[in-house]
Image 1 (cartoon, rainbow, N blue to C red):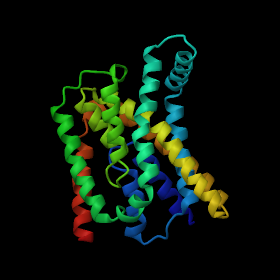
Image 2: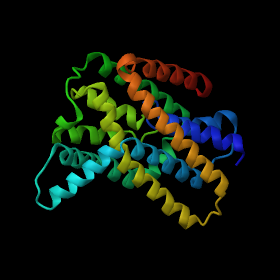
Image 3: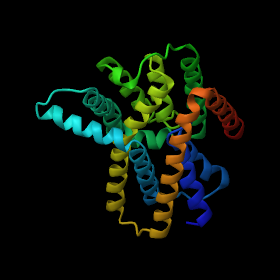
Image 4: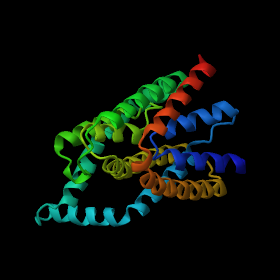
Length: 265
């Protein structure tokens, strides 16, 4: 891959993975719009590992405490708020994992078109705006119950449709259930850890089976750029969220969806 392509795609992955604007949509659309050749499976694995490293590093203290208390709950030490949060993250991952396992090929074959992305970008963008304006937003992520877990988990499964945005729809669901903007975002980011692990593992398995010779320089650079950009994205997004809300992202989604309709209809 060309150096400019590596940096642009890795930067795009890092910035869009955790913003409510759909990383998969942007990674599908950019090569189409500028007529680049497909970046390949190995590069997708590399940038996924980069974003995984970023979110684990940013929430390292929470992740360590959650894992410690979760293990404690398994060995009879009882539950804490952190162990319950860990269980919530794990259980909310199941719907998306099962949906991806059963329908991955169909989604990849039939739902990666620009017009599908345009429809989901606009539709779920409007839903995000409605949740941001109308929801009560009074709870934190440690108040999440099993009903909430199921709803957010199903929302994350829907995000397998390109253009939906995993972070966007899980934050939308969280706010609709009464979570604050910050709580909805933090839970969405924690929820990304197991799903990125599963996605990267699945892609790695396919990569091994394909026996594709790796371009190590491109892969290492892509991992590094996506990790740094994703870490900075999480940091500044959480700092700005209460000040700006989600409306700038809603407007961006509406404009992007309109542009896609004009370009590809």
